Length: 410
Image (cartoon, rainbow, N blue to C red; front, top):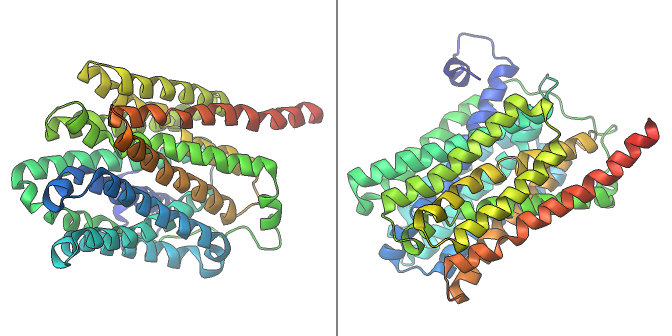
């Protein structure tokens, strides 16, 4: 595990790839902040600004929708502009968006418009981090790429846990009326990483003449399937993550503090444990079967959360979903990077595009079904079972031609 000293990157020492990985870890913590702070404030927004469930669902979709637009643009321009410039810009956008989240809802005539502007701003940064942090880390020296990728993405989970615990504690102390202090405090984290990415060493990208042409990627049925797997991964994760806090409070009737700690916080802890375990043991586990097993467990967890009459059992379903989805995103990335090693940043950009489509569609569909279903959010979560089912089927289809090719070579 990386030391605190490595993450802080002292000016006196020569910076190494170890410090680059530390900056990537902190980048995923920054992304966890921008994706998970607002959901903890959804009830506050509802009460203060009279915002409906459908409007909250649109905020989630705007966040991930903006990120997927950035993902799409990055396919063509990331390598040309340069990873360092874009990662510095990413963290500037994250920090600025968080400050705007604090200021604009009370400064504009339409609080909802203020929320939208803030979300779009920090989502630009989140999209760039999603596209660039993984290939930057993947290019660093080392053999255990799948395990390293899982450990990298574990920092998103531990960042999520930190956001939930610290935000919940501060809200209990300062009260929901002073919620606007919190985004400004969290804006410090991406601001610090601006300085880190201005200095850490970055490995050279795949040379343009050696890179797999974009046309070949987009005409590959296997790569299109990989994008669909990323859609299912993002939707499976965020359909629960984004609604867990509100589901616990409004659907299960527990207090906000207990709802946040037993819902999204335990979800993030379970997801972090899953990714960290695979980061340590990953080379001993067959990735494809682990992904299928995670998808089956995810289906079971969604069914428990949606159908259980006991609130504690439903909360347990929410929490264990975090473990079930832990391997999905980094696992599909690793499987795809291994299959298309010369794809360059375009592979990660397109996969991130697919993942963010899932992150936008999953919570939106959950909210939309919840608005019309008699059972409310339980009905929305029940509909979200479609995504892990799709992932399980897709992984089995993805590995079939790879195994056939391996047998032919043998």
